[in-house]
Length: 361
Image (tube, rainbow, N blue to C red; front, side, top):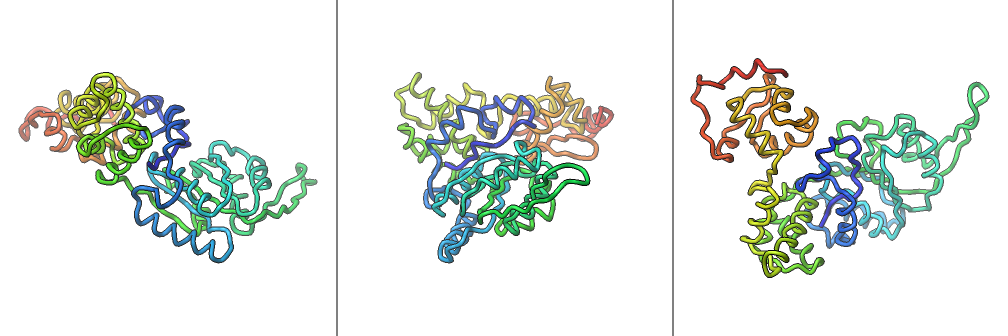
């Protein structure tokens, strides 16, 4: 099982935090993930190319007796960035320090962390793109020269005191790699992008989780959960726990395809991984606006959610699944959306075939 347990969600809409198919982690997720997390690259499921490349980087560093190059991991929440950072530390036989970009608001915060690092220690910096600019500029010198300048005093009398740092490995994680400035991105010796998981990989994740949780599940049951997990191990793990609860209360505790499908129907997660919010957006777009185009603000009002919730929580997955398209004129449903909801699209030129562009952008 590979997912991040420390993804910062302070900037995300509140509706994202309580979704069963949301990729952010709450306290319960973090507690379970700590017990299920892989401890080595050999145990890590999926991300084959990243694992192979990272294995070479770490083994070469060990052979040289040096610290590993700085590592940048990018990708959506829940794909394994935090897990890989801990594996990097374990493979190098080094301790790990964990913090996040939003927690470092001043250069002094970063200087305090860097000055307390041990030689060879791994510093994991989650959501690195949200670090303050002064701290970011201090990090350039720390990564390249293992040195920081600590400013003492203010105004004309301020003095820069150079502080030597022991060699360390920075592992940065980001969900928005495009926001990283080039000078920071270029200082990472190894960069990797985490991809969404294939259903076969998620089945392996689910079987491993079930074994560790002492849950009996058959191949078809694992496949049913994997197909609704949005390509994300964290979601697969969460759905497995909810299906386990249903199987223990309503059945004999064994998870089959029928039990998994029935349980997830209770939790309103359909066979493509859409939940109540996703379907509400599609139903409003199809039934009220004839498939669009319709402006985001108008669509959000129709759904009864905030504009940011629709745009940041529901739309990314709907776009990735090919159910919704963002166009200059507004949001438009694809033929797959009509099929998924069992509706018949209107005839070309009929009602709703273009009039909705009058609604707000």
